[in-house]
Length: 232
Image 1 (tube, rainbow, N blue to C red):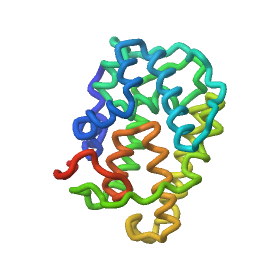
Image 2 (image 1 turned 60 degrees about the vertical axis):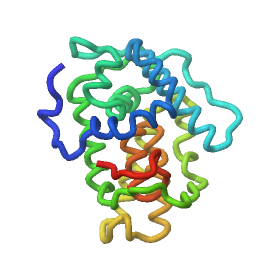
Image 3 (image 1 turned 180 degrees about the vertical axis):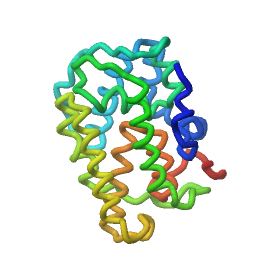
Image 4 (image 1 turned 90 degrees about the vertical axis):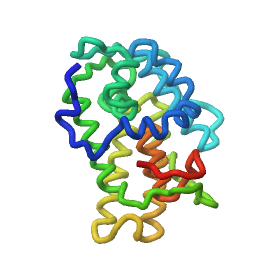
């Protein structure tokens, strides 16, 4: 696989986030890490099931929707298309978007280098826009309550096995958030914008836990998994 970092600005570094949040995410998503030794199609299925289950748990739903039992075949134009190698190359956040954002779960999927670059660029835009909060160096005393409507926006699409639709709605949430905050920083925005920020980041962690948890912590919306130490 070609060095994708040659095409991407270093200001968003998924490998740095993986280093900082690796143990925490592995504890939160053991099913995903267990599937890393398998093919990309297996990881794709496990990701979809894990994300739907997490959203259902947060909503208090008792039944999951009809997620397809198997995902469509995944092919790439890379020499080594296994899940573990690709995750190490581009980070789990980017790989998850590449596996789930473009077509419904049951349809075949081809991942190209341009696909990976496109998702990386979107996460870089998210980082540029939202990472200017002062990093939290201690656990916040009280975490703000997650807005009640947070996961309801994406859950119907997830229940139907349409992760691509859910991610499209996630992108729309980001567009609405940035449009509302054009005249002021997100940190200093109105209370309703803070709820929108919290909702977007909470949903982002479903698909992209490394960047999502980091941004939640930076904005004081979750407790860091450590007591001291800054997030670099």
